[in-house]
Image (tube, rainbow, N blue to C red; front, side, top):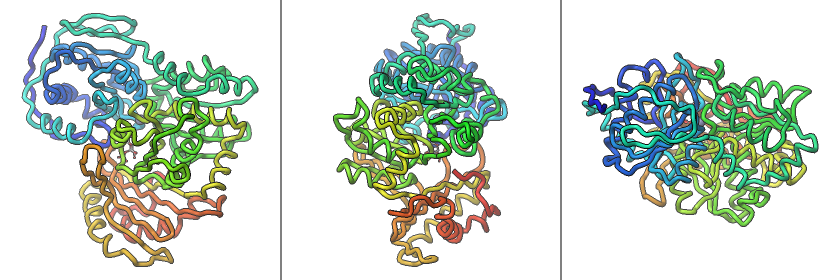
Length: 539
Ligand code: G1P
Ligand code: ZN
C-alpha cells in the first residue's frame, strides 16, 4: 500500500518566524504539503520508534493536509501519531501533549493569526521534542531538502476516521486519537487557583472571551463556563470554522473589533479577552480599558507570587527585543534574570530549558511560561483572572497601580503592509548602514545613544541571530524596525515605538509618541520609499 511518488521541488518552502506559512492557493497545489513533509521526514532520518503529535486550528485545508501527513508518516516508518479529535489541537495544547508524552515532535496546522479560507492562509508549524518550534539550524536543513526533493512516500489508503477517541493501526503505525482539551484543562488546573476564580464568578464577576471562530472555542467553553462557572454565553464565537466566519483571528484592537466595541460600551463585562486562530496569542481588556501585551507581561511577572504554581519563585523573564522594556524594571525590582531575544517564540526555548527564565512574552500579544514551550493564550487569561480573584481589583486598577510603581512605557507598533520585497530589503539594508553614524546626534530634542542591528547570542547553544534594527535614545525611548517573517506575500515593515515616563501616566500613547514617530519616518525614509504616509495597522 506504500507508494513512492515522483515530485519536483518548490523553491519557496523556507520557514519564517513560526513555520511555513503560505496563501491557501499556494499550499493547496499538488504535492506542496507532500514535498514539505517529506523534507522534514528526510531531515529527521530514522523514524522508527518515533512519535509525533498532529493537530491544527481547523482552518481550511487542515482536514486534507492532516490525512496527507498521517498517510505519509505511516509510509515513512513513523511508529506512532497522537492526533487531536477531528484534527483539532491548539498550539499550546500541542506543546503540552508533546512534553507529556515525551513525543519526538509535532505538527500544528495553522497560519496562527492570519485569516483562513480558500483566499486566506494555510501553515504548518513543526516542533521537536522540546515542545517548541525547531531552531533555524534545523529549518535551514529542511529548506535545503525541499530544494532537492525528487520523491515522497505515502500510503494508498482511504481517509482515516478521526472522529472517535481511541487507537487504530495504519501499516504498523499506531494512530491514537485523543481529546485535545482534556490534558490542557488539567494542566491549567495545576497552575492556577481555580477555586478562587470560581468564587469570583459566583460573586457576579462577568467576562467575555472571544474565540474568534477559531480553535480555542472548545477550550474556553470548558474552562471558563463549565469548570469555572462563568455564565453561559461568556464565550463568544466559539465554533471553530474553516474560514473563521470571515474574521481575521488576530486578537488586537483592530481585528477583535466586536469584542473591543463591547468592552468599550456602557454594558461592558468586567473582563474581556480574545485569542488568535491557534490559541497562542491573547488580548486583555478591562472595562473601557486596554492592556498592552508589553504591560501585561510586566504585570504578570510582578504578580507571580499570587499564582500557586509560581508562588515559590520564578527563575527570570525574557522578552523579544521589539517588546517594550516595561518588564525589565520588574525583573530588576525582583532581582531575577532578564533576557532580550529576537522575535519568535523559539528563541525562548533554550532559556526555559536551562532554567534561566520562567516567563516570557512578545509585544505581538504573546505571553507564556515554562509550563510548555509555546506562548499560551488561555494561560494568560487565567493568570489575569487569578490576579483579579486574589486582589479584588479591576484590570484598570491593577494596571494603573503598576504604572504608579514602575512608571509607564508608552508603546505602539506601526505596520506597513504589502510593501514590495525588494524595496523593503533595500530600505532595511540602507538603514542598517546609516544607523551607526547617527549615534550622539539629536533629533527634535531626542538624543540617540545607540543605533544599530540587534544581534542575539544564545547563551545555551551559542548561535548568533541578527533580527531588526534598534535606535535607543538617552531618555529611554526606542525605535525598533523589523521585517515580518510570518507574511504569506510581499513584505511588512514593522516599526515599534516606545517612550518611558515615570510620572506622566495617563497620556494618550499616540500623542506621547508623535515626535518619535516622525523621527522614525525621517530616518528610515519609509514614506518616500514605500509611498505610504500612514501605517496600515496600528496596534
Ligand atoms: C509575528 C510576531 C511575533 C510572533 C510571530 C508568531 O512575527 O511579530 O512576535 O512570534 O508573529 O506568532 P513577525 O510577522 O513579526 O515575524
Ligand atoms: Zn498563533
